[in-house]
Image (cartoon, rainbow, N blue to C red; front, side):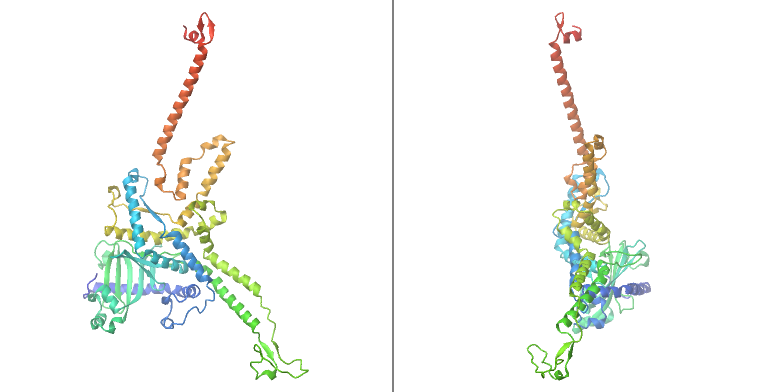
Length: 561
């Protein structure tokens, strides 16, 4: 933690630079605000105060002012729930660790036991922390707005602690490869919160005075800036070999003092984006694609409600004699009219012929379109599969849907799960909670394989061609026996097993298979030799009983006896 003291001029310039960077990132993000506001209004109203102005935040009765149907909200919640259960379900293992490359030395029993033990401990750490609760919130924002952010920090009690950033609170920037390399935030904390978190020595003079008072001044809010970025050693802000750094400062402080400057030895932020376009830092989402249907659905529902209201209580043309009889046309009302006045009373101003049936059908189509755009039908399909193996039997339409979701899963694994697991692994290893690495794994980066329901189903789609090929080979071999020599059956079966999620320890090694084949071949050769010997002995016995004359049999004649 950075001790509060008067910084040098270089640090003052760095502080100003970070404030300018935060402002620039805010300007870059402004073009997204109007779209995010519409998404929030029509999908998750009253949930994102950072998308509201200060005046709007003060109006507590602003809720659901545009939303007349819960279909859109339920659609994104179903999508988020399906992603959560399909990718990182806490009820089943969803990742495996493995060593890179086919080096036989890395395939030892010691390495396998180490990897399995690490997997179990990491799963336990994730389950006992707030990881899955934070992930559920992150999935909802990711599916709705296309971008979400979460930070993973060490925690004395739970090993790790996850913190969600609300949309509108954080800013992103990316490097030349399209990877997020900087995350910043603007947030407010009370004086008491800042003092407890960073220590009173780190506070600015004004905040320190409020802290020292110890009265209601502790609840005064202080605007703060927060940034995680690559650590540039040449600027001298954070000496050492840490690849990243985390900075906190008070926005109103202009003398270059930071609340904290902390080294990060791995990237701590999880920032998945649903789909990217060109150089955009923020992603688009299925909710954005469904927004037009959602808006039309609200208008259609409003039109139907107006039509029903007019049908129940239509506009009337009323006789002037009823001007002062407001209750005459009510239920049970009575009006006495003179005889012979056929036009006395009231009649509808125009006929109400609202197309209720057609409108209901149109609403149903819009609702179905919203659900399909949010992939609800896909997740209902996946949840109905009894086993992962069943995914290999889906028809072409379902295969197409899984393939369509493939790029989204791949991006989420790269931007969401990879940094999250790397961060949790590093924190756990530094805390001494993981077993000691085998000698062959020292300084080696382990690879991650995801084995969730969705990733397994995605890979299972690739096993369909293997099934078709082997099935065709079996049929053709009945007519053309040489077709049996075409497929490499062992490699095809191994690829199939990997596609449906069979663990490596469930398969015999290639060496064991080769030895078994060699033993079978030797046994077959011996059996063939024994059969030939048996046939020869039988022939010799028969020949010994054949009289060729001269007191000799056929065997003696052949031997020259």
